[in-house]
Image (cartoon, rainbow, N blue to C red; front, top):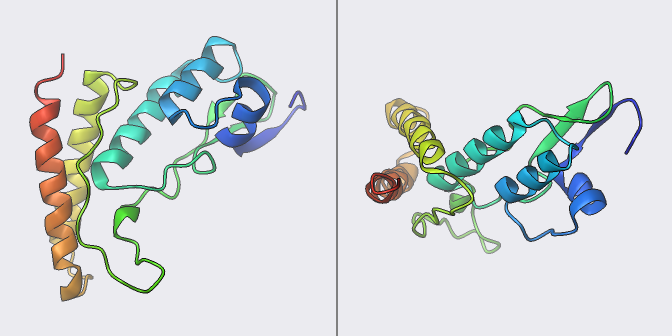
Length: 161
């Protein structure tokens, strides 16, 4: 990965430089930044994306959904976010619609300030969803579930240092 240009997922960087595919994005990016493979500011960006995704019910934050870019080689920069949505509501294989979310896991790999910023963004996100007229009535239970999910997480975030 020493070529002049690079665009790829954290999966590619993790496989070459870290070797811990099970680690969440914040930990992987912190390790990659410490070794000079990614810009230091990517640590905060990845942590915010992880926290926001957790709060909105994005259950699909795998290593293919966070990417880095560079035209000059290392250190790589965090690419713009993509595939950030509440995948916890994705229909199951049999077509069943899910309208609940498990409680958010507030991992210690994200600091309290980042959780609070992610909460602010998640509140904006849910307010936008609630104000939208483009959803069918059958999605109403999902909107309620996101609201409860965020409210429950907010009470725990308020207790973080």
